[in-house]
Length: 382
Ligand code: GDP
Ligand code: MN
Image (cartoon, rainbow, N blue to C red; front, side, top):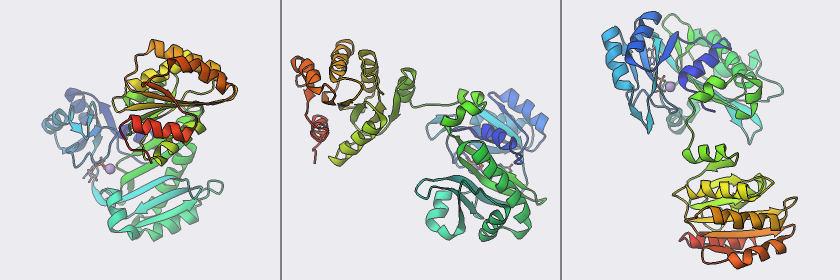
């Protein structure tokens, strides 16, 4: 779950990280009232789930009520990279002496947490990584050991920050690591992490991604309200399906997450591109199958559908009956290829047999089915 900046700052505040006083509002008059409360000068900031707001005109300084009116009016409704601004955050402006970058995320291949710190903040970190990779100090942290103060200090020294900011930076980074681990985040990023003209180190921006699997141990209800999902994912989620939208053109339905992932791999292997990941789970009955087909059918990217079922506890004839019944309920646009194997696969194939046509084909193996799906989508399988 991705947080908006103001929610990220609320999250940070809970871990003792200094952020500016501000208010989230959705109209111009409330923006003015917020500015009067937090005190001028203020910054008016677009709240969208995308970075680079400053460049897009979504971050403006205001010294009085007229300027707040002007900027709030311009920013509300603004389209920033396809995200329409509905909420703005008005915070007391900071006097900036330095802009740094700091983040923690998971390095899966190293099986460690990765901290990144740079004296070149404010700008896009991807640009820094490309043009001056040495300007980013990295630290890999064993999650069992955690981040010690000594290790943190060494990391800060390696980043060549202003020596006067060292203590303040160490303090914030230890708190940020805490927020990242105890707060169950997958990513915490402060860009810019600023040194104010009075020397205080302070979080001027907040980017936080929370780990949805940990939701049960937290009170994240308010954060969930502002989430914008992919429309296809929303529809699938409401049907209780495990679905991830992708950019390709072969719609995929499989039973079991492992099989669904292998199906993506095989489609890629034969030169195709999957439109989605969809795991219908164990009981592939008609309701579940119809729901899955409806979701995939609603995706205009999909040019063919690959149903890949390996019967285990779920028996082949049940799945076949489910597919036949679902096809009677949902009018499918794209041609379907089915690979049915495992428990009672023969019985299942017999049930499908009378229903086979150009629009509904069966293939004996996963590889052949993947090739057929790519071919039916107009591609040339390898
Ligand atoms: P982003 O562009 O979406 O990353 O939005 P940020 O919150 O990082 O703001 C972009 C830039 O606006 C920052 O890098 C600062 O240079 C500037 N900015 C934001 N808040 C303040 C502030 O309180 N005072 C000053 N002087 N500049 C600010
Ligand atoms: Mn930023």
